[in-house]
Image 1 (tube, rainbow, N blue to C red):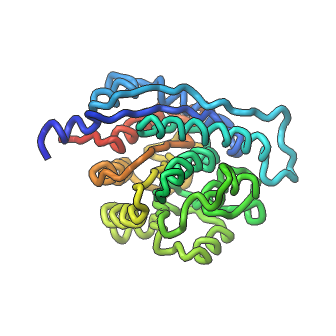
Image 2: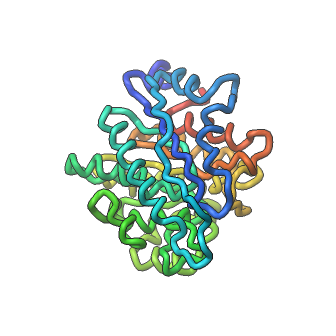
Amino acid sequence: MGFEEKHFPGRGKKVGILGVPLGFGAGTVGSELGATAIRLTTFRGNHLIDHIQTLGYEVEDHGDVEIIKPTKPAEEKDNPKYIAEIYESSKNMTTAVKEILSDNKIPVILGGDHSIAAGTFSGVSSHFREQDEEIGLIWFDAHADMNTPETSPSGNTHGMPLATLLGKGEEKMVNLGGFAPKIKPEYCAHIGARDLDIGEKRTIHELGMRDNCFTMSDIDRRGMLGCIEDAIAIASRAEAGYAVTFDVDVIDPRFAPGSGTLVRGGMTYREAHLGLEIIAEKGGMRSFEIVEVNPMLDRSNITSKLAGELILSALGNAIL
């Protein structure tokens, strides 16, 4: 690979930035501010769009998806919570992502809590389905996000999106866009889990996905390189390539304190970057999403800056 190709990987390519300021799918307020924080935070002397342009990409910011906000607090018995608003907002996400892909751009989606993935990946899946192609998915997360209303301890939808995409859960959400499932289990890889509910563990085994899930124990034993290469191989079975969704709580709280569901023992700063650097080198990524940045819980914008840096790694930024 020559110097120009290595350091300007975006030449001839377009990126469409999309904010999804939805935070009421989580139990802690603040992630709805994440998209704005990532856009506006300066790191290495510039804003996110400036950095992406430096890599050679043509960049357009598509603004924020319209979010249908709740008019009253959820009740304790509600499960899933705020499902009507989540569903209507998700339809808007699906439409917005499809439009970006239809314009031959790589969507870079700024969340928001992880409930948005049900809507955003539905847009990705729908776009490629209309071309008679399957799409894969790599899911970075400390949690499985595979609860259903029957298994969820909290009723918070940010713990349910992967189950929804796999065809399990609340009927309207499962059938968003008029088809289900959005992803076949054999094309889906999960990386970095360390905090799973018993119902999620059961679902993983029932779907035959144990070998597709690379937990922190697997990363400890095998290293990030081996795990991410296997995850890419799984997601690349789909002929259209794969999407990536990255929950910042997959990273250890020492490096990413600004998130609402922190769990000790996560990826290091460098392991997270390495995983995305390898993804960029392989070249099969069709969209990238980063979620659960909560500026209200952050310290000195550490997590917002890290989110920007991770986006650059996913888009091909090279150290040398």
